[in-house]
Image (cartoon, rainbow, N blue to C red; front, side):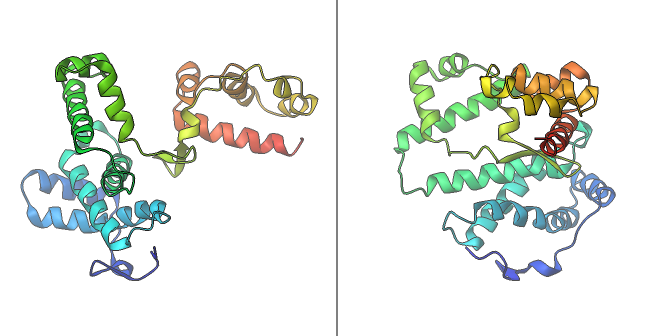
Length: 257
């Protein structure tokens, strides 16, 4: 897949505008009042976001024009569901929706076919999940979804597993001021008693070079197996800050190992 060409789906990508946060807020206010011209300007001003997302799928053998069109559908869905009152950057909200739309497209066009009935069950389960989240403001358990569908729990689990796309540990799932948080950052370390880590003199010496907060973060993350979210809650900073401090500390330690 070639993504360096200037024109995609008839759009000259080199001429796409870049909107400031203030411009986006103003346009979004007009969109909420039914201004279609503002909606078109908002979509065009965020097409670079779609371009940045489809580059992650450049090894799937899909034509870039197809991915771009599907990504635009995800962008439009994000615009339709975005709420300024949540105080979240539009890009932070839109990227997962664009990725999700592309993954659904790739899944439905995958050479490894999942039966139509199984896909239908999975999509119904996802719809019920969204309804329960909106109703109860919390993530439902599988048994609740199965009860709504009047199906055995195991059948719902099997259907959802069948449509899952493998995700890289290095898949970025969130961005905050340019600092990406990856899937691997969300995973607890089940091997916190690893002898090679605890008994390593080199690592112990390197940790002594860190400040107290960096030591605490690495201790919680790698000795106690906490996730970044758990560490953030314990020490009272954002997950993005934990991610940034963790990476900085590890990089600093490498100088002494």
